[in-house]
Every structure is written in C-alpha cells, then in structure tokens.
Image 1 (cartoon, rainbow, N blue to C red):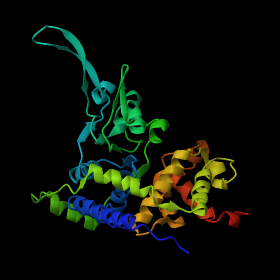
Image 2: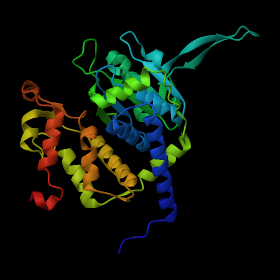
Image 3: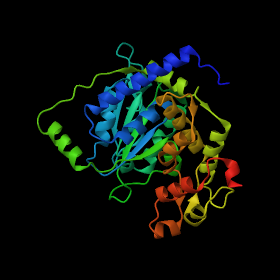
Image 4: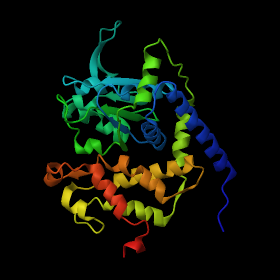
Length: 339
C-alpha cells in the first residue's frame, strides 16, 4: 500500500511548481527559445549546483543569466573573464587603510565581485588557469580564504558560467577539477528561423522586457530542501550508479565504446548530479518518486563535461555525447536484465 504524502509537503510542492513556472515565464519575456537550456539552468539553481553554458558568441548565454538574476531577489555580480584578469580581481584583496583621527594604518579586506549570491562568470575560459582556479573554493565550499582568514559566502550561492568553444582562438580549457564543480554543462545551439525573427522583432524595435523579481533566496533554499525529500527507489538509484560507472574504461559496466574511446570516466559527483536532477524532474512532474526516465533526461548535461576521451576517440571525431548516448542505449534499466 502506497504511503500517504504529507499534506504540508504536497502544498510546498505545488507552491514550488508555481514559482518555477513564474521564473520561467519571466525569463521567457526576454529569451526566445532555448527551453532545454533554461530548464537546465533552473535545475542547477534549485538543486544547489552550478551551470556551465557553452556556445559561440551571440547566442544569448550572458543575457539568459542576467535575465535570471533579474527574476530573483538575490545579489548579482558579473565578472568578465579576460587573459589579464588576476585572482585578486575576483576574490578581493587586503588594502592599507589609515584612520583619519589617529593616523594608524592597518590592513583591511576589500571584497571582490565573488561576494554575491548569483555570479555570472562570463567567458570563463578567456582567463588563465590560475585565475579560473580562484573560484574553485567558492564553488565547492561556498567560502573564500584570503591569507589566514576565511570568509563565508551568503547563501544561496550559484556560479553560472559561459564559455566559448575550446577550438576558438584565445581560450584556455578549464581544468578537470573545475569542470567537475559544475553540475551541468549545457550546449547552446543556434536558433531556428522563426526564433531569429522573434529575436529581431524584440531587439530592433525598442522593445524592453519588464522582468520582475518573483522569488527570494529563502524560497530557493526551501526548494533545495524539498528536492532532497523526493524518494529515489533502490532500483532507480542502482540504474543511476550503473550508467555513471559505465563511463569507466574496462570497468564492470563499461560498454565497447567506453573501452575504445574513453580515457577517464566520471566521479561520484556525477551520480550526485544525476540523482538531484532526477528528483527535481519528478517534483516538476508532480511525482514524489524519481524514475528511470528522469535519470535518462539528466544524463547528458550531468556527464558530458566529466568524461575525457582518449587519443583514438579524438582522432576519429567521436564526441562525448556520442559515447554517452550509446551507454544509455546499451545499459538496461534493471540490473537483472544485464545478467
């Protein structure tokens, strides 16, 4: 007999779904198309993760994140990454301050743009690896250490980064350790003809979208706690583990494509992203149990930036998405089916 849902939880779920749609509607006032990208960014937002958006310039990546920030009552900061940007430009630095009355001088910390709640790291791969790594502690620990002093960042805290394709001139590939900090990597594709027409109608006629804040930080933190209360049955969790471990070359669940093309598979952080993303999808669908289809829907954005191809994979022009799609196709949902 199915257990009865707590009325308070059910009410909180309905309120969250309503708020989620409100945020989507506000973003839709400015952003044309890219529904999957918007949903992916919001999934990261409501599960406490960070999002990385990749696409050529001019596709609206920055505009999307700025619009999201307008729809939320959070402190927003935009950091434009450039080759000459230094870590202190992001984190902040100690400066000498003189008291006017006594003339006494002392060091005082002046915080940088990283001290906000939603961070737009624009074109993050334009900066050097040294500067990129400056946000590692903030993304993982939600704190910043300068000298011997640690400063706790205000919650909720999100990093939404954009990057140009690695093949473009003047870019620095993000270190694997930093890529792993992002919950999702979302690929922003070109708009179709109808979408381009609507973009032109909105942006070349003096139209200014009126974006209103519809959600507070406290409501976001409540939504994050609610997502974690969604149940994932043992057999669904087992499936999420197996499709994650199927990326490990020569592992117990590896398929032929993994053994042939993959150099490094994913860490347990990928399974965490899969689980939280699947729980959020269930919640949006009005369910309190994550399903196999929820895991499958979250699989590519949660995995694609964590899998490293070997020389053969790169030489043959195989993409990580190609390998991951084959893993999904060849990994059965139930473990006994693989026996």
